[in-house]
Image (tube, rainbow, N blue to C red; front, side, top):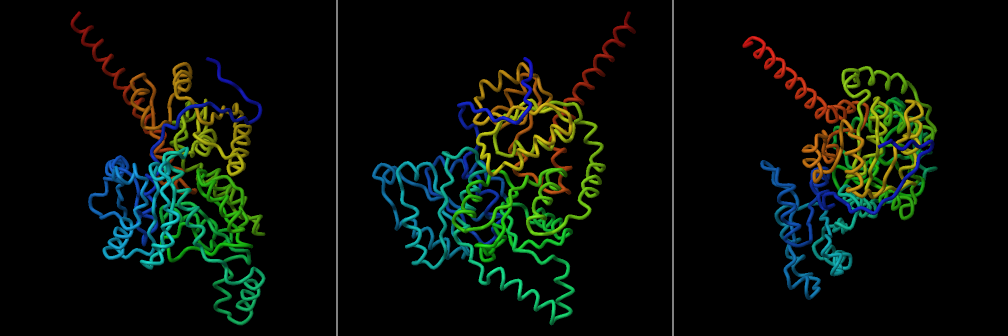
Amino acid sequence: MSVKIYETLTVECETGNYHTFCPISCVSWLYQKIEDSFFLVVGTKTCGYFLQNALGVMIFAEPRYAMAELEEGDISAQLNDYEGLKRLCLRIRKDRDPSVIIWIGTCTTEIIKMDLEGMAPKLEWEIGIPILVARANGLDYAFTQGEDTVLAAMAHRCPEPELSVRERKEIIQNLFSFHSRKKEKLAEYANHPSLVLFGSLPSNVASQLNLELKRQSIKVSGWLPAQRYTDLPSLGDGIYVCGVNPFLSRTATTLIRREKCELIGAPFPIGPDGTRAWIEKICPVLGVETQGLEEREERIWDSLKDYLDLVRGKSVFFMGDNLLEVSLARFLIRCGMIVYEIGIPYMDKRYQAAELSLLQDTCIKMCVPIPRIVEKPDNSNQIRRIRELQPDLAITGMAHANPLEARGISTKWSVEFTFAQIHGFANARDVLELVTRPLRRQKNLEDLDRTTLVRKNNKFAISQ
């Protein structure tokens, strides 16, 4: 099969099903990120079994999530069991005393039209704890979008800025004028509007991105989500926001339309090239001139030389699972790999516009054809294309990994990139570690086969 070559970036669309995890899996990383939260998933026994199996690895820590199981009577009679939820929330308050309780509505609550949004404000007033409602159900395109719905709901609870931009500037100028010691401390940063970053990252990775921006004299005013619900950042007119993950389009829309924030459209900080482009998009908007970024990126590429030698010239095929596909493909193309196809469950072209533009520029820079991007791919068609193209690696959901391995195609679970630390300059090595692991395993197997064959031939020659 000949590879389709595109002169410009195009997005095709098929009519396949979504072969991804359930979005309620977002609980697994969000309850760890928001330390004073409690997640209550409202659904059936099936949802409980999924949580128990998918999130049951936390052996030594008591998790801050629970399951509110709907009985058959609740479903068939379409009851809104206010008293049942109240009893659970009172128990949560007594046992855990969280700063916020987040209700995760599942497919069942969506189908029976359970009025979680109507019950939450009344119950919140009764028990005295904020209750957020997020519809993270299987009707979404990808499991990572569960985080998107939670952050969009949380954005409504962010406080408004107490001071206008002009008033903040005046206060900063006064501090510079009258407090010399404060002046030295504030001088590390430029005098720029507030910047809030959105997307859930491990605390150490968020600190790394904060530090990279600090190198450019930019101060991050806050993160959505914050490490504690009580530390949510201020949002409103005059506040600039920028995302770190490509699956947060609903959150971005909420921040623009409801909170009146200014969105900085940037590629996502995955890989040295993406991190540099991310910073280069933020700095001019805030009136800051970048310094030393090119040298910083080159040092990272030099440190990756051993991995680049392994992947250069190898081919990869993305089946589509977690919405990170375009960013990962762009980075791997920059590393010298050949990307045959980028499958993605859902493409928001407006939110990913800067990332798509960087992908096109990267292909031109590396003198390779622009890969086909297939939204909502039909997996039968994809498997047929994989069989004909025979890529060195397929990055796929867990459902297709073993069947592809049985047919001689090396695979990597895309879910591993979701949970790995892949953002920023410092973590580019971790991305390539994940990508090269199946390639190294395949090479070791081939070397073992050759060694075994040589030994057999030597034994045969001696016996003759």
